[in-house]
Amino acid sequence: MKKWSMTIQQRITITVGACFILLLVSISAYLIRETAAKTVPFNRNLTQQIVDARAGEISSWLQQRKGELDALAYLIIHEQMSLEETLSMLDRYRYHKDSIYESFGIIDDKGRLHSTSGHIFSVTHRPYYQRMVQDERPFVVSNFICSGSNQEEIVVMLYPLQSAADDPFMKYLSAAVPISQLQQMANAIQLYDGKGQLLDGVQDGFFMDGELGLDKEYQDRELFTASIQDTADWVLSLDVERTQLYVGMTSMLKSIAIISMVVGSVLIVMLMVLSSSIVKPIQWLKQDMIKAGEGDRMIRSTLDTRGDEIGTLGQSFNDMLTKLYSTEQEKRSMELRLLHEQLKPHFIYNTLDTIQWTAADYGADEVVELVEALAAYLRLGLGDGDDFVPLHQELLHVENYLIIQRVRYRQIADVRIEYEDELLEERVPRFTLQPLVENAIYHGIKRAGGKLCEIAIWIERTESEVLIYVGNNGHPLEPGRMNALNEALRSSHRREAGIGFGLYNVNRRIQIAYGKSYGLQLQVEQGWTSSIVRIPFSGGEMIPDE
Image (cartoon, rainbow, N blue to C red; front, side, top):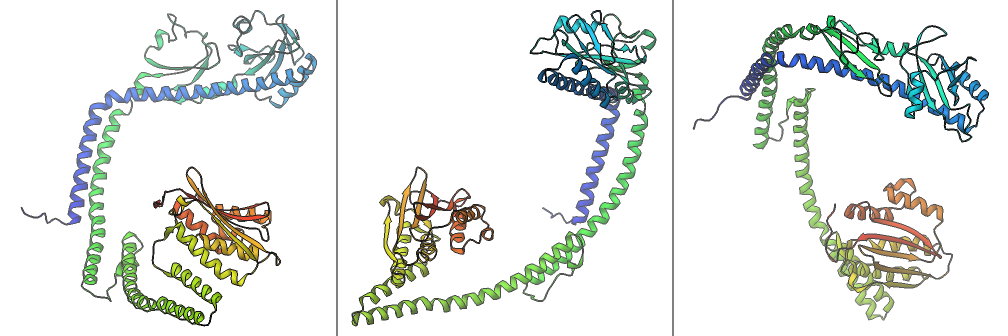
């Protein structure tokens, strides 16, 4: 089978060009077939959505007024205002809201409206009042009414007053609102040759055969309507000529075809230029890689001066070569250093053995015990092994450390270690206990002023955790300092409270091994300062890092 020998540039140009042509032909065919069937329904649906959205804005505006009336009603009832106090308060509120409200009033149980303007008249014959009384609605908005004071169109809103005193003069809260703002919101819809109108359902020509519609002279127009929430029969309407929904369909198809041809031609040219600008630098970089693979240590890419991704690739290639050659050199140095360092532990062990036997010959038993403890301590610390060790090995390491420290610090009166045998095989991070014991000696016992102190290590298990306590009864940790250290341990920010490296190191290694929910915590209780380690119980098995 013959190998495909086309270049990347040719593949990019042919593939993208073919995809574009196929896409263009498919889109054109689809538009020609579907536009006539989809454009008008789409325009109709889009127009209806605009009308619905504007109707929602009007409904929201009414809901805001309802919320204000609810707040006023609560204030009247809560303050137990009289009729005169209520009208005075409402008049002041109207003064601050004069752009929204024309007037306020209180309706008594006989249907008489006491207006903030001082007028008193009956509203029992008004439809909105009858709806409120008969249906016991929580909120009623009237149809459009001509205001008697300024001959403007208004609507009246009623809100019940459920007074605890059952005041007959305080039955309903009334608010007269000009609809000019609502009409402006409705008129803002201007699509095609139509403009939105807000109607209350009783205008001439808007009821036909029991359904909302248009007179016969308007049958060549398209009607879009949306009801207004919390009103009896308010309607936001928009009527446009039906032919307007078809305008632009043919010109749109022609424009799409012309634009597609122009864009396609420009795209092919740009693809050729773009693919060439990508392929050539890659070919140069390929030659540099071949030379580097052949062992040329002086080769470097000249593409690192470019400011684009190719330049970044060239810079990364140069950085990789630099690090590779540097790593090779460091590897040689480390191998020589490792061979040299392997000699040191053996020399130390042999020297300690010599000191131990010499001290034994002279009967210096305390020196023998001290050197033996030091040798065991160094073997456990310098010896090979995993990052996780059994708990019994950590305890042995701490015991040898304490043998050495008790020679230096005579204040250590007693060391108690308590544990359950089943926990001795539990694996913990290496060097978990020794830094905590060292912290107890230097910050607790050393600062105790010469009194004899104890160190206690006890280990216990809960249902899912192992708790390790390292405590001392020396100088106690101040509460403020303890809280600052615990906060620093929880946040893993060592510098926030000046936390020592030993505590930080233990806590950080535990959190890296087991997660943020585990770690180290300090506690002061009954004269004992304790470092508490929390790790998950594993039954002696290694828990992988999450």
